[in-house]
Image (cartoon, rainbow, N blue to C red):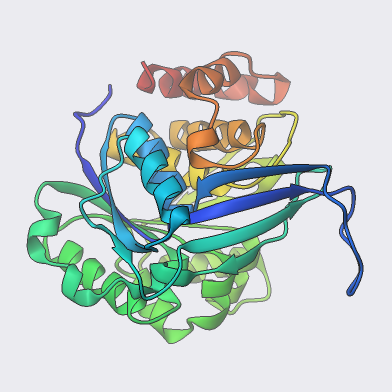
Length: 331
């Protein structure tokens, strides 16, 4: 069932994530003493690229880092994960992207982000040969916020569309809130849009979720992957819906769960899995990602996903045929 290994171009952010485990979030002007600190290579796009690489795809990162010690860490991690670095440029004009993430005991994190050199990716770097043998282009929504990176993202989108290459987008709350018409003209070009309920409402400018989903489909999105946290996900296409329950796990940190979810949906799409199997696989990847600190390279591995898919609870019994399909796709 597994497709041949093919290239996926991933345009977005590479960051260094600094996690601080705190007992509770302080009020403005207050203090919170961390009892644990973790440092990981992260960024939504990098996390997704790492997991796609582990799933057998040749992934190529399209972004910039700074020319600093943080970049050394990022390059070392991505190289170890066999992520393509030919189009990941070190740039002394800005520092490597940094994110500080206070995490409370329930696993929820608050993010303080410095986009840094990620925003320096230029449209001149996005050339037609880059898309030779590319099976899919994945874009992180945060790549659409700042120039010249957002122009580079549009250039990549147009080149991909001209070659009939499917495009996927993992949106994010801030892009949904600020992009307006720019994002609206993007929707009709998307094979897959991954987002949460809040982003769907903002993007569709609707007060209720059902009209929002219908609006997004009417704009031309082929598949919507709606993340519902502990409740699982809802996958929507014109004429079909699949509501898949989540997998209960002991959550440590939710960072990277959405990126893992996206990677699994992309994998299912490129391997022609049923909508139900894609959703179950995505839920399992997202759940496993929450059991460790950090995303991407910190992901426990495919065996953890297989174990989760192999021991469904009562809520998942009706989905046994698709669970078997999802498991088979990982062999």
